[in-house]
Image 1 (spheres, helix red, strand yellow):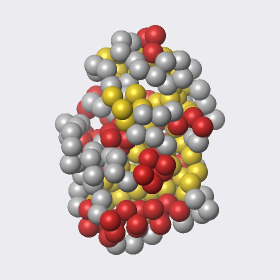
Image 2 (image 1 turned 90 degrees about the horizontal axis):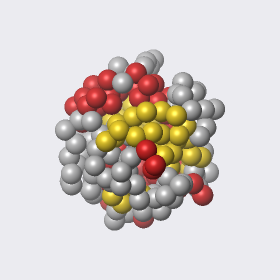
Image 3 (image 1 turned 90 degrees about the vertical axis):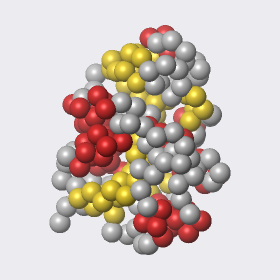
Image 4 (image 1 turned 180 degrees about the horizontal axis):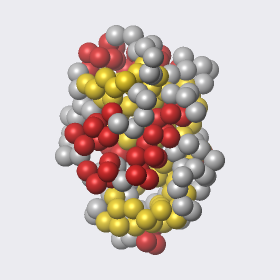
Length: 217
């Protein structure tokens, strides 16, 4: 049987127009069965059937108290968690979520071309990428730098675009293990626009991150 993914796109703050294209892309990334929902009740049931849970441009407070407990227990027991783009703009009122993801979104400059530095190519999400990756996105800044608790895979070259706010050390994509059960967390800040989900390199980036988080690498 193909592994199952739970893809969650609930928003209670800003909603990205690219969500439908993003969901469609995830459905075609690999040999996954995808359950897509915007219902918080989906997290009030056991999550054990899923190889990974994907928060895809969620925003605001999107989980009930029971849902928070279920998600935390799932990852602590070894489940996979993937955050894409605005997943970092989510659950600001739940401190555990910031720890799980590694940080929260702070701000972003205008959507524009720039250059991403691929720091670590020894990972399924980055092994296909060039050392410098030309991309167009919002180049998220974060409240804190996740480097101390996460393995940074890609960082932003702020000299290549206008309005960066983190300086020379600006992580964009990272992964980390979480909990005694070795749950796996992967996050990428990229993925603002529909065009990203048509880009072969970005699609491979997502596929590699999901595969790793789901312990399928």
